[in-house]
Image (cartoon, rainbow, N blue to C red; front, side):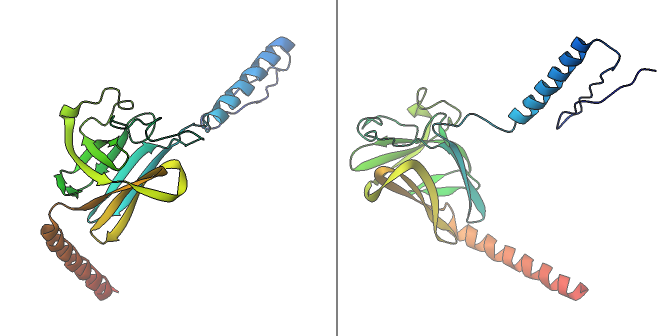
Amino acid sequence: MEKTKIIGIGEGYFVLIFVFLNKNLHVKKLLFALCISTSAFSFAQDYSVPAASPRQQVEQQFSMSKITIDYGRPGVKGRKIFGELVPYGQVWRAGANSSTKITFGQSVNFGGKIVPAGTYGLFIVPTEKEWKVILNKDFQQWGAYTYDPKQDVVDVTVPVNKLADKQEWFEITLNPTDENSGNLVIKWDLAQAEVALKPAKPDAVIKITDKLKEIKKIESDAAKTKG
């Protein structure tokens, strides 16, 4: 009776290779090599080539919903950034690789202008002393090569501040200023700019928040009663 032996089980899915001990040695070697290749493929699925401009996603609670930002983070790497790598007066993708995406879970006041809830491409036209920050309907393009100003939703112009310490990696953050507002902070190299964010309808937000608090209190009291 011929014997069998299991010599490989691929992680994440089953690959069973049976070697018939009485068969040709070359067949055994071939099956063993196949097993090793399968294992290596499974191992490689957990890794990727390091990115020159790593992708980052920022998600933060904002008022009654949240804001999510997805963007690439290029490094300074000894280069002159604004006015050279990023030319003044030209639209820039506000990051690296595919365009920066920003998603609002509720309508917001973006630097004084109302923006409906949704996902937008974030672009910047920099100058030495101020930046025009743009929200565009097209958030799926590569860089700003197909940027169309006709797709702009809003744009706001904000002052640029000089940083005391160099920001090596491009960064976008969300800094809350109170429960219902905050600042979108963009910085790279020695430059920083901020866009103020608030709910589009603050009075409605306050009323809804009060109702939500009432509901939570009712739920809490009901839970205590059952206990």
